Length: 223
Length: 226
Image (cartoon, rainbow over all chains, first blue to last red; front, side, top):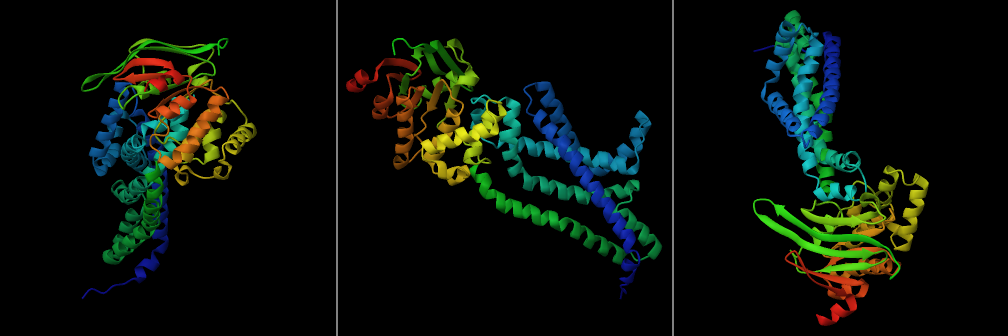
């Protein structure tokens, strides 16, 4: 019979806390960069210039298809060999996760904008607004409402994906936990605690997403 | 009307839709409209009424012919209200009204609000000023859509079957609003199915069928012949 020793969690609580903070920080930065880049790409995806929309489409398909772990390792180990650009583990993780998230955001953005009836666009144009004014004042605010639950889903996934950064020694939650395991030899307690911490981090996002899905669904129906 | 200036001239305009099948939207249509005149486009579904209005509004490029605007600029002085509910659902009624003049720098916020409130008072919608479109009836939505166009003080107003999606009891107020505008000399081209309404508000009626202008004349004369 295995004897649980939960005292190890209390003993290393500061290590877990620091790891959780790095996880949160990395997630927030990925959300910021990935959403910004994805929004720009989503708008470019609708470009009348075929070459632009094709390039964006290839980008989206590429970064959705490549596994994040492969991308992470490639950026950290291969990129320096071919470009002489050496990123820190944290920066490499930020770039890899942001590229992945931006591809999903771009696709969500494209679908969200396409879901807005054409008449909404035309009603701004006929009153004299420029296409950019229509996009930013009329289309995107409506599209974001319908996209928000979907975006939150991507953000939750990215929070979980930060654990992959442990393979390139980013000091996030899982990496720190592995260090604790190698010191304490209590993997079951540590992994259980890590699972609970991830759950605690993700739960607010999940509640928020489900609230938005039910709360906004009614409003989106009106659009 | 004799001394008034011509503001719109459509010369032999043709619009062909090239999708899976080529189909003629409108063919060789010519007419002209003076300041203060109201024209109604009458015809069955698919006659080309909406296509003609969308061409006049610059929403559809024409394949041949010419559309000339005299003394007015398309995006500055021509407004279009469609049959679909086109209010912006994330904005309240008053925000729907003031957004365009603010973004185009035509008015300051205070002036835009004053003008919007004056329009809402005049057409009995003041109590809806802070309501979102989802809380308006179909008729109220269409009236707000017309007011949103009117706040820009258009020289020409294009209305595309704006009562067609409304229940019978909701149509009255919208028709009253249009009649008031007609009496005040607002130049309008209105697509409608309703001949009785057309004969009440229009100076001239244009009958369209299968994309062709088959008959045109004074409302009073044409209404008698149908």
